[in-house]
Amino acid sequence: MDIIPEKNCTLVVPAYNEERRIESFLSEIKTYTGPVIFVCDGIDKTASIARAFAEKNKDISLKILVFKKRLGKGGGILEGIKASETDYVGFIDADGSTSVLEMNRLFSYLSDYDCAIGSRWLKGAEIKKKQKAIRLFQSRLFNFSVRLLFGLKYHDTQCGAKVFRKEPLKMILPEITSKGFEFDVEVLYLLLKKGFSITEVPIKWNDMDESHVGSGDGIGMLVNLVKIRFGSNKKGA
Image 1 (cartoon, rainbow, N blue to C red):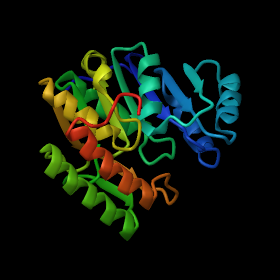
Image 2 (cartoon, rainbow, N blue to C red):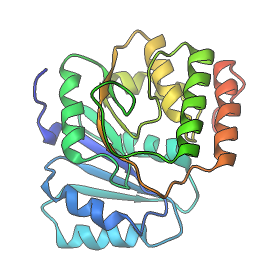
Image 3 (cartoon, helix red, strand yellow):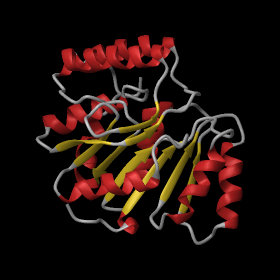
Image 4 (cartoon, one colour):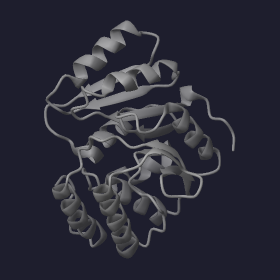
């Protein structure tokens, strides 16, 4: 693995109603020298807080995209990817579960692979704060469903830390239909179908109590997985 300069790596941050947690994350990216794109599609003060931070830290390459309608996790990430201009791009949760240092480590794997995904379930992962029992159960059930439907052997498709070479992503963008939390699965599935390489990397993770994923979302994700797998999920739906 070779170190890839931060200036060549864009971080996309989907930030839906993150006003209570965004300031901590913004403090961390002060040390990041590459481009950062925030995608704000909520109704709280997340975008205003990010803009105020950008005004005070003009040396940071920070772009803030604001949308009046809810894009969904996948939709937000897609908008950030489309707005990125570097050869490498990744996405990271705005809640601080993953550090920027860990993202840099993931980016280094792109010297050998087209995609690198963080994993909380591989041997070597460091979990500072574990998920609650119900979320752990939902996560494992979802992973089982992914393996059953798509044949993906990854331990953790939903970890909010993934990085990509930009060119492979550009090839699959027109085929992506998912705008929700199942977005990660579809992206990995499409990359593999095109013959691109993916590696799963144990990661340092700190689970946050608040989550935008509820039980209803979990059911919807499973339904959408079936639609994606069998081609009934229409573009833009």
